[in-house]
Length: 313
Image 1: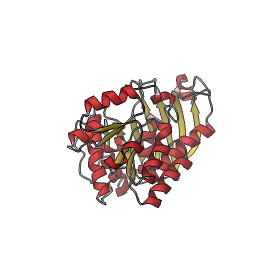
Image 2: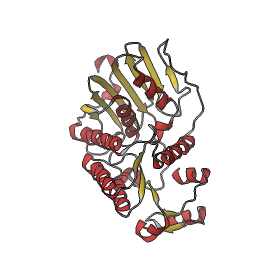
Image 3: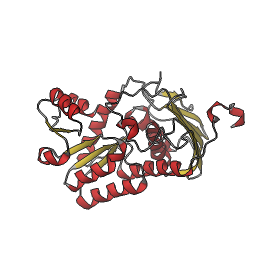
């Protein structure tokens, strides 16, 4: 997705790095003008900015190696699986004076910055509670087993990282109250998380196997604001209280490729010193890593909790 977005933007891909020999052959055929190598050290002189899209557990070591070598880095979400690893990445970026950002691409769904501006305006009054759900069949096509085998977690660290990031962006630092999942010593496919952001209670439900609402529902003094979490919903803005005095949201069609294109625009702005809200900072990445780690630490299992009638939950 990243390399394709660079191509659409007319930005040359200088080097492609993959430890798998077959993948390197395929990459060389797809991008004949780029250098192809098994490790970054072999082609360090060829590039200034690296897009790190390796399996999750390698985000921290690969990013730290590149930052220490004087390269700017955009690392895929989640930034890391633990707060310590994320903080180490931020620390080396600061020490070397290099640029570091986190690719939470779904911030670029047009309704997200619009809703953030509306919440920040104060027109909706006090936020009373928030409900977020994200779920569906996980049919992402991966090039290798690393998508699962080398991930830092299940649905919380993968799909959930998108929503956790948006919740922290909109409502501030998050604290994990509880996490119930079906991991049983492995990776969870379902999770229900109770969070608080200051005094705001937040319920987050995630699934890789069940279809959920895939929205954020924000209950405020003025009424309900509900927005889509991804591009698969019929509308990005589902509901907004009447009488809101902001520019109306204009519905638009935005596929995932378009969001990657917008992420590159935000990246270019940030490199020029105009950091947009749609590009996650290292501090944002640290917050997401902290929630992922906390969920793993406090998790409990009460299967099959996702099949229980809502009145019993």
